[in-house]
Image (cartoon, rainbow, N blue to C red; front, top):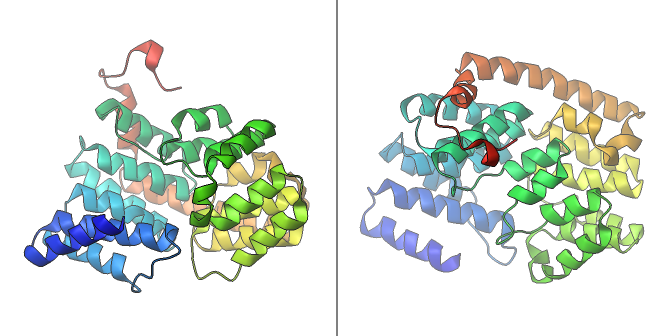
Length: 313
């Protein structure tokens, strides 16, 4: 990633008006901020690179796609969703825009829309990756999570899906092959490994170490909350879950159906968090409809579907 960053940086220096280079540079900065603990990235570097790309080309699909996780992690998933739906009206056949909608809609709790966006991508370009595995995880469909997760760059979610299905030995064996990547998401990886080792004290310690982190990644906080609940620390789980929702992530369906969150259901803090999330989901759904979101569902009714035997269920 360092080499890619330096090459894209060189591109922007050679041609400051080349928008795709700025978009790719922004993506490199964002990746380093999130996953590379050993690299210091100047504050706002990713945001500045993306905004430069948009100034040069406001319709650039790769910029809209790569910027979406940055905007969602900053707590503006609804704005990202509306932005993408607006761009989609002019660029309906570009899979990158729909792939970004998979991500943004999931953050907003619009899981059906997230799945529809993924199906749209699949029909446009079967090889184009999306984050739909996380959407299926939110829905509690762990088999489809495993099917759609990218194992080449896989880190955590497939092992977690196995553990959620009670397939702990498989999950532990899979994590062992990822040990060199633990530093990319230490709280999640170490706490899951501790769970599989039946060591709740070590698992909770791994979660608490991450608590003061400056990283405002609401989806990671969601997974941390889920693991804290599984360990039985309801106060920590509620605190993490409240942060996740406050920072802009969440699905009420997931919170009420996920068995790992069940111990929280009777707590007052969980009920407050769930109420806040449901109000926000209603507002987000209205915004989705007003922005013309139904067009991503309309794609399902077109005649270019994949053959019945290969259709995504």
